[in-house]
Length: 118
Image (cartoon, rainbow, N blue to C red):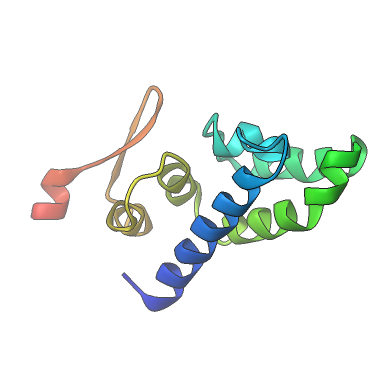
């Protein structure tokens, strides 16, 4: 795995844990549709970005900077990498996503282990 991707995933892990530790954010708070429901399309990131500004409640306002950092880091990954990371897979599987070694399934993606081994 390249060093830049590894550092980004490490940052995302810390940011996710920090968000989950915030009051009212145990399920991902304003980023729930991404972090817990695993919606990882670009349009889902845009939806959450707009939500942070259009529906600013007090708790949303307080975690907005943290959520924006997470959205920025996620935007640097491709959709498959985001999906794998959001599902809490290990970093080697995110690397497989980077190398397009994933199979699209009805409910997301899975690693094509035959291609990894081959």
